[in-house]
Length: 300
Image (cartoon, rainbow, N blue to C red; front, side, top):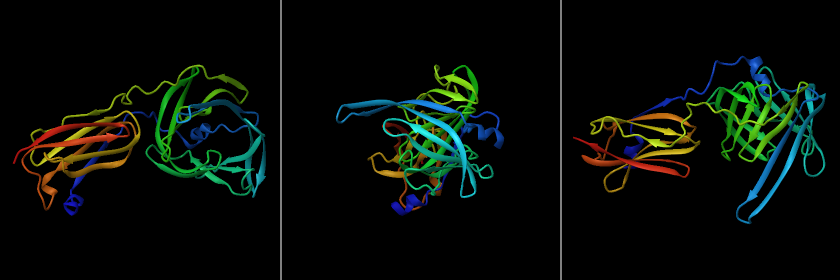
């Protein structure tokens, strides 16, 4: 059975949500990291431990206080004021590749790590090593779309840290807006302009707001049918087919997916070995804590 499942011929169609505006030039993409001496960002954060019923909060302030040269490369000097001593680190962007690099003074002064790539396209993944966030991870570029932040018309760039599932948002001309659900920008000074982040980010209206598994079409079917669904959250997603006895027949999707609309074609003629019997069968969609099942009918 396992060998036959591996031979199933499935065509996965990804219908990308229309959540991006006109493509940005490389020069514009650089503005997601508005490096300039004198710029600063202040974030509020909350840490909550539900097991021990413990909560803690605070404020972090990042300030670009100067520039220097390390290993023949110009870098910006950035300080982090939080609880405890002030920390200093260095960041730069390679304008040729789009890689964003960071060096932390409190770890290895001469070891720079890639923390982002601002030229990456929607759907691309980026391998990172972010010591400031305490993780080696991969970033998935989720979306770039028009929005308004604190009455400022701008563009939002969303990335997902795949190891943790945290979403980070950047605003063109403002920099990082958030990391996860409990680390958000409160105020900033960018190129002499002060910003109080007092309004919510306007999300694109065509991102799905609910989890939907549609009835397959055609139904009844023979030999091919299409299963469509919508995801309103990001996560590892599975779509599986079961026979009437609940035995798994095929895995149609087994991948990390972002919010959007998807369709999968399931064609029985490409299957070999044990066949799916005529009659009722089931298909089940699962992403994170969400799961739903529908039935379909195979006529032979």
